[in-house]
Structure formats: C-alpha cells, structure tokens
Length: 232
Image 1 (tube, rainbow, N blue to C red):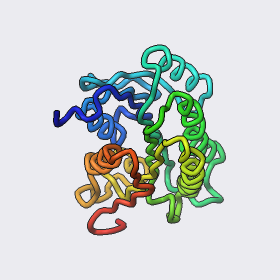
Image 2: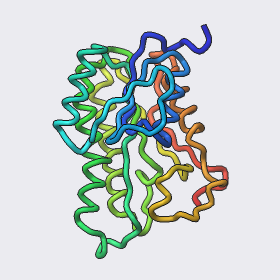
Image 3: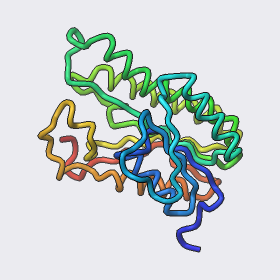
C-alpha cells in the first residue's frame, strides 16, 4: 500500500525532536516506519504517531549505551540510522574561539556521530541504511565557524570510510550536505538571516526519504542540496 513501504522497519533519528531531524523522522513514520527519536531533553510538544522518544546525549558514552540497551530490548533491530544531532557556536575567529566551545562542537558533531554509529552497527541487518546529515560546511570554510566546519569536514571523512567498510555487509551509507536551511541554528549567530531564501527542513527530509526508498542494490552516496539562490 502507498505510505506503508517501510512498515516493519525501525529507524533511529538522533536530534529528532526539531528542525531537519524532526522532519526526517515524520517523513519516515509517514511511510509506516517505527521511528525512535532521541535528544538531550524531552520535547514540549506531543510527538506524532509512530515516533518514540528516548533521552540521549550523544556526547556521553553512558547515555548512548543506555539508549541502545533500550533499543535492543524493545526492537531488536535497526534498519535506518539518521545521525542528525548537531550544534554550532557563535561566530568567533580562531584566536577568540573558547576551547570549551570547540570541545562541545567536536564532541557532538564528530565524536558523537562515531559513538552512535559504532553502537548501532551490531543491530543493523543487510539492506540497512545510514544517513549522516552533515552540512555544506563539510566541504567549505566559513569565517568564524572553525569548530563547526572542522567537525563537519571530519564527519564527511568518517562517512566515506564507513561506507567502504560496511559495503560488503549490504549497508548503505549516505552523506547529506544541505546548504542554508530554515532552522533554529541561525538564532545564535545570524538572527536576521533571510529565512525565506533558505531550504525548508521538509525538503531535506524528502531527499532523505527518497534515498531510503531506493532499491537495495542502489545507493546515493552523497547529496548536496542548496537553496536556488545559492550560498546566502
């Protein structure tokens, strides 16, 4: 039946309670998938049907182990992993960037992605899919965003190595590199950004869903998605 292509499948979307992560989670659930969304804090609004919330801080190895212990007990498998958790930092040149801000961004965007993926792989059967939601910052440099760009460059390198390592297991690995997208991340360094010119989170989610629904013998390895007006 249309809308049920992913029935019986289980997905995990980290950082899945708002922004792009929420849009991806809802898109997967809309095709029948059972979706676990994780975040550091429980969302204020009630989640849509088929979405199950588990608290998890991807910077914390103990928190990640608790999440996957619960997933193993309840679902026993994981067909789709969306590594979406990500943070940025206020604009600051390298000399002014606080080391603790650097550490927090790297711990979330790079080390957290590694730890979650490592915990997920034993649960993932053949024909599973891993989507790492990165950023156009994975291939470009933006002044004042040293930690963010470094974390995303590293995450893209990790994604490319992972893809080769799990290819023989039949696990597909996709890097999504969205350009400027209308989410809350802009509030901390450009509150007056031209939101109407940006991508919508649902647009990114649609691309991710299409990639997941491809036949098992095909994979889109990297997708760069930009606003029609280009870099803002």
